[in-house]
Image (cartoon, rainbow over all chains, first blue to last red; front, top):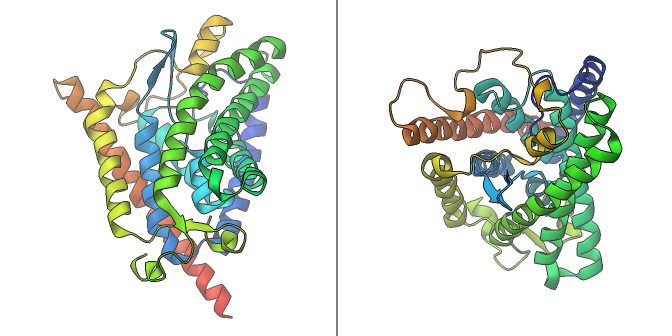
Length: 211
Length: 114
């Protein structure tokens, strides 16, 4: 769901570039306060994994394709601020090195996939963990990821409507519809990775020594 | 599910080196080996753009990307063009993030000591 150059109006590009830059600058400050130095290599590796997984488009209903987004995954592992930085870095590298996502739409892509994706994913995950408990944590991870990608697609739909690309009433259900399907793949991948990379606190007291 | 959330959640990031190594190998396999066989169908946003008739708005603002469309130029085999671009991207990604996050978290530790 990388918005290319040209889809958005000049006003929307300027506004989202300014807002995206401000949000990223603030997220850097928050990450500086919250990320511990032992988490940095793990977060960097997770970012590389998200980049690689984003290349693997899987076919959807013969008509379209979807790929993993990863914002919810990063947020579930490292918290929403570090996740927003990880996702913004992915988007910047994709736009600059691979021409995937427009330079003028970079702010919009950062706001939608990095920030909406990370914070919706984090919020839904925390709420569901409390509601469902640790036993159903896989369900929480799946649902948080599904909601995060659908919410991000809603943000993209809003910006497209504001840009006059398509009426909101048409573009929102269209984006929701496809990303509800893509979200199933998103949820399955994120759920598997979170299950694999997290463990019960205290189950391995010496774990910190290896980190 | 770590750091500040430790008190709330019962789960935290694994410290197992084996698991992080598996993730690294998975990353290299996805970027280098699996990426050439990804679906070429339009993604969700492109599909909507085609259906609602705004796909023509797309414009190339610049042509400066060294590896447009995830392909390294000048190699006769497409799978190698894509796989190599994927590997380069994954390595650049890890290096940039590691440098940035190490600098950020390093300052964090100093700030806490004050």
